[in-house]
Image: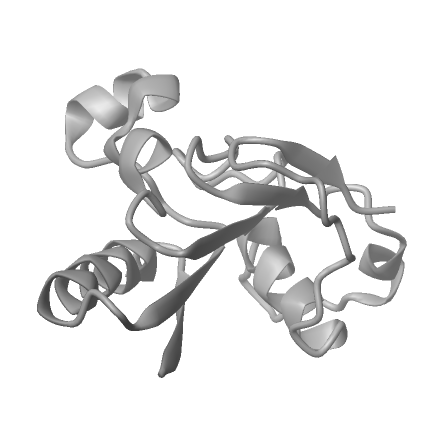
Amino acid sequence: MSVHLIGVSVGAFAADAAVETLKRASPGVHTKLTLLDPFTAMGLPGLANPSSAFGVDRFGRTADDAVCVLNTDDPVPSTNLPLRHCRNFDVTKAAARQRFALLPGDSMHSWPCGWFGLVGGKLPAQPLMSRGAVFQVP
């Protein structure tokens, strides 16, 4: 059996926790975790020092396959750094961004989710990409 969980922004906390719970309950289940511009801070320390935020250090560590899609230029705090236990896809300068239309009042925080939808959830093939690595999507 295989389960694919997707977490968007602060929903990364729930998706990652669900993977951890599922792996404890059913270790044989194959899990894939996809996090779209995950919010990584847990409390003020994570906001003050984003590079040591909870999610940067922990998200994806128990998933069989873990992916993070992020951009590095949105105004939402603790969402702009790659995750140590995920294969990271940086869509900040992706060509598809030119045809992405923001909803009124939105920020580019929604761009990674928009990009994921535009590509139908299909990530660029990177067979040698290790966890923690960053791929700049053209």
